[in-house]
Image (cartoon, chains in turn green, orange):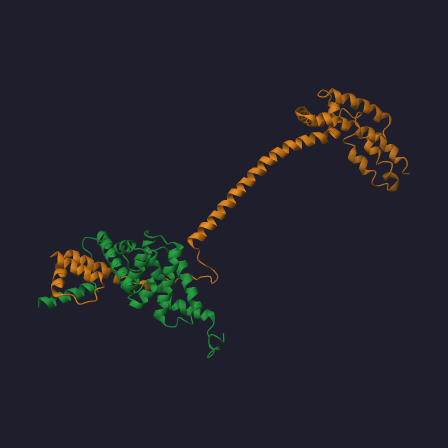
Length: 187
Length: 235
């Protein structure tokens, strides 16, 4: 104990407090990330997220920054999902995914991706994490990460397009930005 | 037209970070396909992972099983099940075989007691009858000859253990037991056995000798003949 933190050995919070804080800070969003990554497989998500949180509590001293901790936890979930062998394209509980706001077309788009691509899309487009965190989550960087991201987006759009309704709602922030640029160009 | 279409797709796929050219923006705002692609990414933005429920509590010592570990566990469970079934099969078949052996061994043991009863029943084995009848006369005359009663039994054993016929003989002997007990009191060599306990225990304790004849009264009839002999020295 003195070797790890000689300055404040007595101020180290007990494990239960650290665990509760970790669950409070990261639990829900990490669970949502896991549900999206496993396409609604609640059982696998519970195991993956629980294992990541337990490992994160053990390294709480090194995971003080919340976003780095979030990236580390997600990277752990992605890695363990590969080890456990989460079903690649099989969609689990759709209602659980719908509760997160993922409609059928989104699920179809995510289901078309492999584990790393899916993790990259979730972390960047859904959770809007920093590129450095996405790099840590998918364990890629530089050109490799860029290629992975482009491929994931292209495949996602193609699968979404094949599965979406005839008139999907076009009222999101990207659509608003596009219309704004177009109006500026016209006017 | 298609160039604008591809340019917009490339802009989207690259992350929509760079500035969008005006002509591409004008095309995309009126192109249904490009708008569907925009809707695809806007749909992603509508997903909220924070709406997920709290994760289930996790046991600190628990670990995830890798696919290989799962395979190993399943293979071990399968092997255990197969070996258990095989062992159960061996036990079942072995039990049947042992039962045959037991019948054979039972055929060896039973002649000691049942051979005599079988003699009383008579019809199945005339050879035994001849020995038993001679022995009955001996037992009637000279009861203290347990050695004589033991001698003929080994003589019976060799033919009984020899082959299949002995297997069939003990079974019929076993069934007629109840009827033979009644009618054949005189032939029983058991009087010889009670004869041996009666001399020793009766003088020692007067109480135990009384139960012993009571126990043996159902099987041999001649015991009542000897009980008065045993009771006589007690007073």
